[in-house]
Image 1: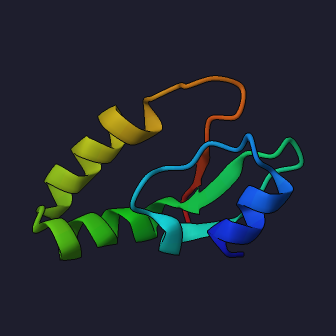
Image 2: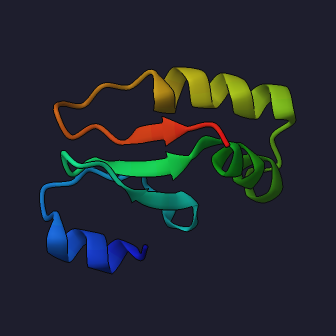
Length: 77
């Protein structure tokens, strides 16, 4: 699913900036769903983080952030 299609169908959906390639779908409530494993790998590859650094960053800054009813969801695949 492409972010442009999601934005068109769910204009109020919130997204995790920089992780469009990690989107795996949308929930029935209109929350964007991301592949958490792919996000961690992307942070390691693109940002040069170690696996531990990426996991800590993800846990605290991404998964731990609640920004309202349409907060993205993160799925471990």
